[in-house]
Structures are given as structure tokens and as C-alpha cells.
Length: 329
Image (tube, rainbow, N blue to C red; front, top):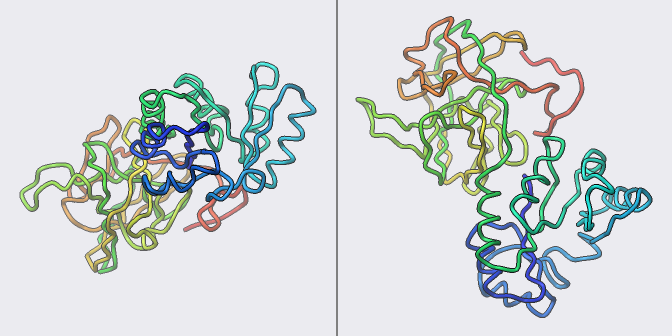
């Protein structure tokens, strides 16, 4: 997950407060103000004597030539590098992002931040907001947090629906209210994940719980802020990736994950990946999402229906994408 830091050096209490209140991951402050930050709230501090130590965990480097570009790439193999330049046209940011996953850049405007986060589709590892006005910094951090990575979803055709026996399924309660067409991605295979909608709709059985996703069996993969996890691994404090039918994403904190024994259902679909599926609870309140954003309950799902899925190349090793031949059945 991309890191968002706010630079409050020279010290500015209001700037640090804005960073805290809008979800920044860290603040950069002078060494004499480390304790001041900790009195305000819990956030990582970048400073001598802080949580992230300059010179050890992160370095600042300027770039004005190809020679300096090489030095930055070499240093980024050891630690995070905050890159500073007066003109990105001299050394395109793409060059550094293509060669390293440890590149941070300073940004002073929302436009610069969006550009940095969109480079080569994956973006930089982190941005350092240097806006000195607390209100401007707050808007930038909040906007970046709420507008995360865009994921391309594809519509696939349901090919088989099979009631299974009893099994353990995971119900994920988040700290976020979702709307129709939003949920999390879940699948039996790491390379094909289906969009499972949150319980946002009225039904005759239970009241809507728009913070909840009845996600699937314990073995299923789901997309988190840092890669994939098994559903059974989720617990309070973890972060999952909320995805909309249109592909926009956001991060949601898990408040609680409940594992309960329930009747299960296998839903399989076919597309350019071949055949893949997801095992869900056999209940009317469990819904997948159709192209266009309409939800369809597993109780009403039929062979031939089109549903949304995220398809990735390669496989996963300890939750991280790897480019190797992996067969999952």
C-alpha cells in the first residue's frame, strides 16, 4: 500500500494535527519535536530518535542527471529514497519507478501527487506532502487516501453452481459503510478473484449491514492493502481493499472477522483464464456483482449470468505476486 507522509520540518503543530486527523502514515519532524508528535497521537515519526531514522531507514537524494539516477537505484536496494528534483523532465520518474519499489517523491500539489501515484500504473512507493498550509495538506492526504488504485474488472460467465456440504466461512465486518456495487474480491485461485458485494440491500431476513461482507470459505484468497491473504487470516486491525463495480478502490479497516460453520456453494465461471470459482455461503444475503453494478444473490444466480471478476497473471507466494508457472485447481 502506498505510504503518505507529511513534512512538518520546520515544526508546525497544526500541520502534524492535520496529518493525524486525515490518515497520513507518517510525519517528518525535527528531532527535538519527536515527543511533541507522540503527545498528539499515534503516527510513525520520521526523525532522529523516531520510528523511521533518516540515514538508516530512509535517505533524501537529488536527481539532475543519469549518474544520480543510478545512485538512487543502488541506494533504494538498501532503504527508502525520497527523491527531490526541480524538473522531472530531466530524469523521468518512470525510469526510477520501473527499476525500484522503494521510491518516494516530494509533492506540493494534488496534481503532482496524482501524477506520482499513477506512474507506470503502479505509482511510487510513497509521497511526501510538503504543503505548508495545514488545510491544503489535509485535503491532499484525504484525497489520496480516498482515491486509491484503480483495478480493471472483467465480466465472466457463470458455468456451474453446486451446493456443497457444511464448511467454515468468514464474515468480514469493516469500519467502512459501503454502497451497492461495492465489496471485496474473493476467489479459490489467486489469479481470479470475484467481486462479493457488501450486505447493503434490504431483504426479508435481516436488516442491511453495509459494513459487512459475507466473504466466503476460510481457504479463499482476498485482496488486501498489501497483497493477498487467506480469508481465515483476517482479524481486527487488518486492512482490506474495497472495490467498486467500476474498479475504483479504497482501503477499509477490519473491525471483526467471524468464522462460522455454514452450508456452502461453489460458483464457477469461465473467461479468458479458463474456469475458476469461489466457494460462498449458500444464503440469499450473499451477492455477487453484475456488469453495471447490479447485485445478484447466489440464491437467484443462474448458469450463463455475467458477473465481475479481477483477473491477474501469474500466481502468489506468501501473498505476493510472482511470475512463475503455478497451477491451481
